[in-house]
Structure formats: structure tokens, C-alpha cells
Length: 243
Image 1: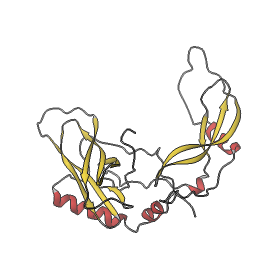
Image 2: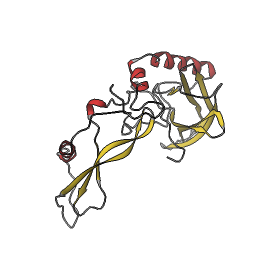
Image 3: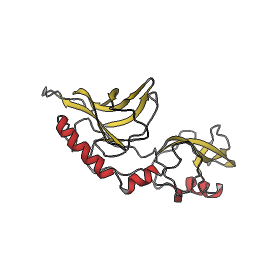
Image 4: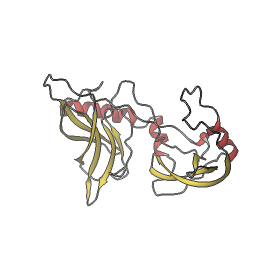
């Protein structure tokens, strides 16, 4: 069975000035959250995400690997036109002197897991050049969000000793007022949202994004339910609060 890696390198664009989905009151949030849940439940993305790179119980999955030669060819090929100038001491070619198979942490649809990676030794460079060794045929990128949508919740974590609470990391504008966090629950999904409102002062607002955490209380413990962001309609990855 093919497995799914949710590529951490796919960064979501953030905005400090609202988005296509209005924040609205509780009725508006529930309507939007219901649409998100119905669109995701049973979709191809849902099936791929739930049959992820590793099983929920930590079972090891077998995946095809690329050779060291192929990995070297992938990271050493020209990246296109680069107009950066060489430093005063000049540029030099780097010489790869060896490679060994190791492991690196990677964010997946089941959280952070250790995946095979080629560790290349480069002459004159102390740090190893690391290239994930999983064959692309076994990798499915994270689903794409709807064009124009804005990410509400960036990550979540569980709260120790409080099984019904989720700690949400979110972004907000410098002039926004945060009213609280909300959750819409089904048997398989939890859709989360942070209720924000522009202060409406009329004064110029710095174009900057701030981040913070807030807790939301569920009707019952999360269990194996998937957490979705109400803004993008995509799964929210679980990350430790200090990451």
C-alpha cells in the first residue's frame, strides 16, 4: 500500500487582513465548518490522509527507496539561473566523498516520523548534506487549499491532563481583536477556528502577522479524529508547542 507524506516544505501563505471567509458569529462559523467537514469527509484527500505514511499505532511501513546515485543527481543538478555573486574569497566546487543511509524526522499525516535519508559527506564541510531517500512514487503532497482562502489555525497540540482541550497556534493581524476559539465536531472530524475582528479604529495598521496560542474545549476527547482548519479546509498538523 502506498503511503502519504504530508510535505512540511509546503508552507501556507498567511495574511493579516482577513480573507475570503468572513469570521462572523457562531451561526456563520457553524455553517462554514459544516461545509468544510462535508467537503472533506470521504473525499480522495481524506482517504489518502487516513491511509497515511504510518499506521496510528506506530506500525512500521515499508516504502521504496531511491539509490544514493539518484539522490546525488537530484540535489546536484543546476537549480536554474542564479545571479548571486561569489564572496570575496571566490567560489569553489564542493566534492562529495561518501554517502550512508540514515534517518531524519519528517512531518507526515500521522505526525513526525523517522524516514530513511541519504547522508552525504562533503569535503571541507562539517555538516552532512541530507536528502530524503523515500521514492517519490510513495509520496503524496499535502492537499492544496482553495485559492484565496486564509489559514485560521497553524498547528495544534494536546493539553496534558485535560483530554478535552486542544492548544491551537494561530496567526492574527496587529490590529485584530481575538475573541476566542471555536470548534465544530463530528464523529470523525473536528473543525477549528479562531474568532478575530478588526479593531475598526481607522488608523493605519502595520502589515505584520503575529502568532499566539489559545485553547478550545471539545465536547469529548479528540481521540483519532482529524482536526481541520476552517479557513483552508485542510488538516491541521499536531506539533509540540515549542516547535
